[in-house]
Structures are given as structure tokens and as C-alpha cells.
Image (tube, rainbow, N blue to C red; front, side):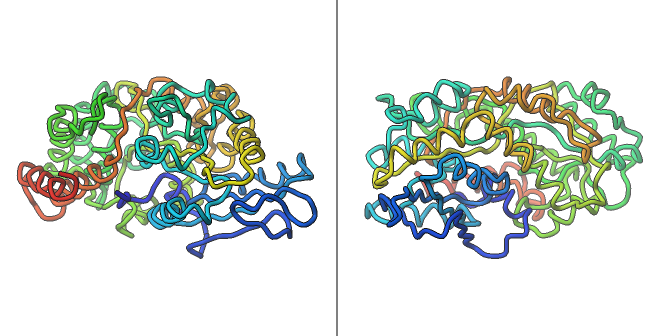
Length: 437
């Protein structure tokens, strides 16, 4: 069931200069390993294994925690690709050996953890981290809670949605560049598409309205509560009108040549498009802010703007959790670390450094005043806070990533191979019948 797409945190990692597939750092010289209770010097060695960039090391939080807790050392490792990280973690969980004291869980995996791995993870509600559970939006904590009330992960970040756009390109096409004025022209997704037609008529050469049909689809579907599974856990992707409508809307945009036909995170031309002007708009979860800066570089500073989704809709795309495997021999100390890392103050620091938006509601006020000079001093703190508050509670399922990937690939076939939307939908249906029944 591994996702075929880079996760949110993987995406951020790709924007960094990390060269290796596995980054291992230690905040001390003490040797440590998963499940090791203590070092020879009497200190507690905590191991932390994550994927991509959660922002803790970048914000100096591991060093800060060691300074606050002289009896604790932290050894941290990060696997760049979540698609590599997760299968390796599954092997360790199955054997009961080799897991770290604290492990990251991507949002697309949390339903699988809750449904089938409760015996392998610590119920955080029964640890010092339990006090944090009430501090999340209901949908964030509910996704990590089993039917019998065990909490298997505490949220790190979420992906509240906005729309990022190139002000210079919109200006050349005679469209509004002011965020409020642009938002006023987009009361719905249909309005967004209509604005795209206006853009296409006067667009600078080589520039499309949006980057991809797949990205457009993800933006629309991120605003829905029921997507691929219903509340009873039944797979309903092919009978859910919201999925069909989002697919059809994105496919129609592709048919009208409103997309740059670039596969997100896979096509190198997509990365170059942020600075080169291949597209004027892109669906923009909070973590995308850092990605744009990384790809467009300093030359892009001041050219990008950001505004709310059409109609001011709330949506969520991405996010992650921290969990403690049952195999940890440092459960109490690990829970203290997880609790501290997910405190509002620490999540606010990570947002300032990397753009990962807090999932602890107590941090919303701390970041509400944040502005970003790169995006023309856009009030990104308030913008994403409002989007997070408006986001629906989404029902997640173990095959979410598989279904999404298949539908996005089907849309790509519409864009690049001229497949009709109806045939593309049928191809996705056949593919998913083979994969998940």
C-alpha cells in the first residue's frame, strides 16, 4: 500500500540540499539505538527516525531539548523518501527489533496504523504525551485514534490549503494581482477555471494557468470530508459523486489546455516551472511555501503571491504524526520528547523555519501574525490558520494513497496522451480493481 507519491515532508526534503538517502545525526557522542534503555554514562539515549524534513533539527529543537534535559541524548536519522522509509519500518515492527524510540508516520499511513497495527504502537493517551491529545482539531486526533480509544500518533503538522500564483504573469495577462481582488474573482472552482480561460487568451508565451490536472484534482478533493472511504470504512471512491466531479472538473481543464501537463514531484520540468513561469497558479498547502522558495530561488522572491482557495474553502493536503513503537525500552522518556516537540511553542518554531503548519491549535495564535516577505509580505499565518479552521473532518482509509495515485495517473494520461476523460476513468477503475479489488 505504499504511496507512489512523495509525502509532504519528502517534498520539503527535496527542496533542501540533502544529498544522501539517509541522514543520520547525533546531538551527542553517545552510542544509541532503538530499544536501548540507557548509555554507559547513565544518560537515556533516545532514537528518533523520521522521513524527509520534519523541521526539528533545522529549528534546533533536538539541541534545545538536550540542553533542557542534560540526562537525555538524542540520535536522529531521516530517510529522504517516505516510500523507502515505510516498508523498512514495517519489517522492523514485524520483527519487534530495530525500531527507534520515536517514529514518524505520514498522514497517508495513519489509517493503516489505526486499523491494523495497534498492537505494535504505544497508546500515547496513557503516557506523558496524553495531555496533548485534546489540543488538536478533532479530525487530526480522530484519524490517529482506534475504535477502542487508543491514540497511536500525535500530530506534527497539517496541510491547510491556499492558492499560490505568479503575480507577474497574472499582471501580464491583465488579471488581478492583489490577493483580495483575485479571491473576489474566485467564488468557486468553476470561477477558477473561467479565470484560467481569460488567462489563456492573454497568457505570456509558454505559460499555462495551472501546473497539472492531478494537482488541481488534489486541491478540489482536499476540501471534501468523504473521499475514498465512508464513515463505516467502506471503500466508496467509485460511487462517491465528489470524487467523480473532482475528476471530471480536472479532466475538463486538461482538455481545455489550461494545464502545463507537468507531473508533480516526478517531472523535472515541474520543478523548473516554479522559476521559469511554466504555470501561473498552483494549489498550495502550507508546506508548498517552502518548496516554492527552494525551486524558484531568490529570483522568485516578490513574484509570488498567495490567496485563499476559491470561495474561501478550507482543505487539507498532507501532514504527519509521531508515534512510539511498543518495542521501545524508553517509552516514558520518548513520550516526554514527543509531548515537547508537539507543544505549540515548538510547532511555531518549525513553521517559522520550514513552513510546516502546526497541528496543535494552541500554536495557531502564535503563528497568526506571520508574514512572508518572499510572497509580498503575505499574511501566511492568518491565511493558513483560517484554512485549517475551515478544513473538514476527513475520513481516511488504508488504500487512500493507492486510489489517489491511480486517479492522478489517469488525469496525466488525459493531459499528455489525449486519452478521453471517460476512458481515463475506466482505466483507473480497472487498475484499482486489480490492486485493491
